Image 1: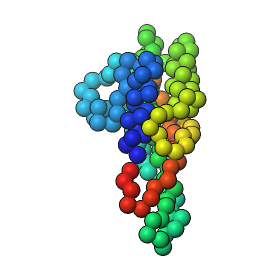
Image 2: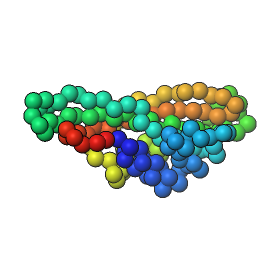
Image 3: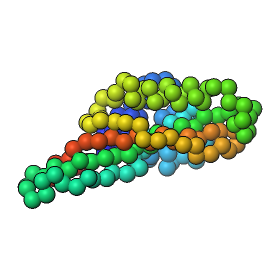
Image 4: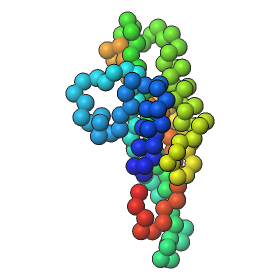
Length: 144
C-alpha cells in the first residue's frame, strides 16, 4: 500500500511538526543522522484475511497494511533522555492527532492506532515507533 505511505509522508510534511519526513528509500540513503525532530514512514507488512469469494473470478480480500511512523527527537543536553520536558510527548500526541483525528487524503480504507514503543535512547536522541493498521479491500487482479 505505497499510496498510504506517500499520503502519510505528505500529511506529516505539511504539518510542520518535523524538520524532515522521510520514506524508506530516503532513510536507506542516509549517511548521518537527519535533522530533528524527524519522522520515518514505511510499510512493515501487508496481510490478507483470505478471499471472501475464493471461487469467483472477482474475489475480494480484506487487506491489512501495518505502517510504521518512527519519530526521532533530540534531547538537548540530556544524553540519557531522563529529563524529558514534555517536548517528546507533545510531538507524539500532535503526530497521532494529525494521523487519526484529521484523516489522511489518499488512504482508501480505515486507519487505526495499533501500538507504540520505545526503540532506544542513544547519543541524546529518542527513537519511538508508532504502528498504524490500515484496513482496505483488494480485488483479484488489482495491485497494491
